[in-house]
Structures are given as structure tokens and as C-alpha cells.
Image (cartoon, rainbow, N blue to C red; front, side, top):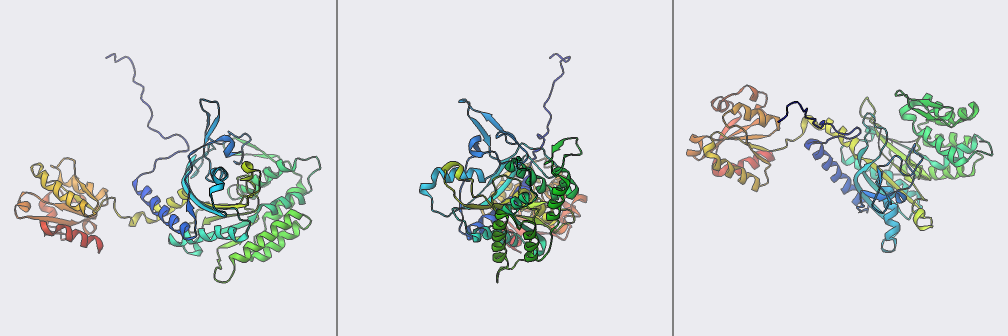
Length: 486
């Protein structure tokens, strides 16, 4: 071998904007998904699974801060030169699937979906290019009750996950009101209202992240972030910016007073008044007798970044920590998305729960009380007795007990105990020649002796601990099952 040639090895790093998820996180995610699945079905939603890959045309140009259909998504051309892309959300694929199969689907169509989505956008703290979403949508209903149900279903998911109404805040607005606001600032006649409206919407949508000053810059000439990247602004006048900033500062806890203040600023806008009426209807529903939710409030700064929203929009964020998690759920009405395929208006509304942020919070909160990956570790005292250990492990597994048979070096018992501790196992089975000759095993309650385990280096020392006791081999399964239930 020529030692002069340097071996170039790949770096063991994840791509920027992606992350690895390990067992305890994934188990917590499975728990959350099971809760969301159950709640969605309680509301009558049925599951739909669409491909991770869609045509770029089907996905459409709806992502924030992008100007081309294939910008912001992971896109490529196939062998026929057609553009394909990884889905950036679960709503655009729903619009395609409903349009494609509408003759076989009942209307209103209530569906839920979950899975990863991908966005080729600038990553940041707790902001990744791949993340998990869990959506519920109602296609074919213009009723404000459908919008309210999107909020109710999130409330019930959070309740089932152990949150109280004091732990989260739901903010609601309406895109039509924002359109009325853009009209109220009286843009010049030659201004492309659609383009400038989108720039204004996206500026307002960044309020939580950039604050009032950052939004004000984006409404004006633009803003340079800490990395030196420049975002072009809406180039509004000082007076126009002042009107919009006054609108964003409406934060009255009484939703009807907030609606009244918003109405004064958009009194001359027909579309604004229409949105105001829709927002009042959903407010009435959310505050109706038996469904009052003190965590709900009107917030005119809620926009939602995706361009396909046409009416009610809402976001929910956790308020249980001193540092904000940001939005864990959001959605709204998108009455024009399906019509891209059918040419007919199909009113629709939906909500998406960002599973990653929610799971990260719950995983950190519950980490100290998490159940171990395995229930029992079967230690190995003598490699010549391996068949006995295999039989013990097999019997436990056959009765539904998560069991790990130690496969490391059997000579170092202390290392076996440290291994059991690292796996957060509840119990260890210890059996040498003398125990098996008497047809017994030693059961160590690791939950009681975990702090001492790192200092024990021999089987004899381990036996002296009060948390260890003998069990007849024939009674082992019954005893372990009893201990696990207690």
C-alpha cells in the first residue's frame, strides 16, 4: 500500500438544515402522533397518504420569500424533463389529490395526513429544511364552523397531551382584513396591488421574529439581517407605514373591542368589512357557551406565510416556557387552491400541527420521567451458561417484556451494570452457576439502586444491595410482570 497517498474520508456530518432523531425522541413522537390521530378521527376526519414527491406545477408557487415555482423546494427534472419536487407542505398535495379523485370522494371531504415535508430555505435555530407535519382539512365547506373546528381540534389535541388552556395561546385574524388594510393605505393607481399586498403580508408575518422595528424596515426600503443578507422592502411611504403599524398594535384582550378597532381602520374597504364579518362569526363560535377558550384572542398580525390563504388564519404557540417556542400549529382558509386544477371554486380550510417543535418540548419536559428503552437487562455471568440466558430473555420477550440480553464482555460485571443504567432499564436479571443450579435467579430493582450501580464491581457486592432478591426461575415471568405493573 502506498502510504504517501492520503486517504480522504467523508465527514460524518448531517447536511445543514437537517438532523438525526434517536430512539427516545422518536418514541415521544410516536406517542404524540397516536394522540393526534385519535383526536382527528373523533372529529370525523379520515386518513389520506399522498406521495412525498409531486410535480412542481401541482405544488404551485405559494412559499414565502420565493419568486420561482422551483425556488424554496428541492426540485429536479426527471428523464422526460418534467419538473418534480419534494412536497413543501401537506395541503398542496391534498388539493391535487382531491381534484384527481373528486368523483369518488364525499363532500365536504374531511381528511388528515401526517409525514415529513421539505423546504429549501435558510435554516436557523429550531428551523430545519426537513420537518414533520400533521394536518386536518375540510374541503368543500364555506361555513365558519369548519374554520372553528380547525381551532377546536387543536385545543383537544393539546388537552389530550396534558396542556391546560393557560399553557398555550391561539391568535386569529383574516386575510381579507389585511387586504382591506392594504387598500386603506391608498397605494398609487399604477401599483400592482397583488404583488405589493404579498410583500406587505410577508413583512407582517415576520413580526414575532423581527419585532415592530424589523417589520417597519420591510414595509419601507428593506432590511439587512445579521448575516448580511438583504430583503427588499415594500417601499411604502411614512404615512402608509404608520397606518399599518397602528393596525399591528391592536392587542385588546376583548376580541369584540379588537374587532371594533380594526373596523375603524378598514371602514371604507368592502373586502376588509367582509373579512371582519367572518372573523366575528368565528369569534362567536369560539366563545359560545360550552366552548369558551380563554387562550384565544384576535391578533391582526397573524398572516401565515403561505400565499394560498384567502380568509381566516390562525396560529397557536406554547406559553409554558420563558423562551418562546414559536408557532406549533397554524392554518386557515384557502378557497382558491383546488380551483387551480378544476377551474371551479371549492371552499376549503385546514390546520397543521408542527410535530417537531411540540415533540421537542414534550421530550425535554418528560425526559426525567421517561420509561427506559428496555424493561429488563439479562446479564451474563458465565459464557458457558449462555443457553440459559437466551432462554430467560426469550421467555420475557414472549410475554411482551422489552428485554436486552447483554452481548458485551461478560467478564466485567460493573460494565454490565453501567450499560443497564445507560439504557434506563427497570430491572436486571443476575444468575451464575450457583443460582441456576438451585433453579433461581437474582432480580435487581435498578430503579432503587441506580445511584449505587456505578460503584459496584462484582456480583457479590451487587447481591448485598437491598434492592436485589432471589426469584424461582419458574416464577420469574409472573414476578417481572407484577413489578412492571406496580
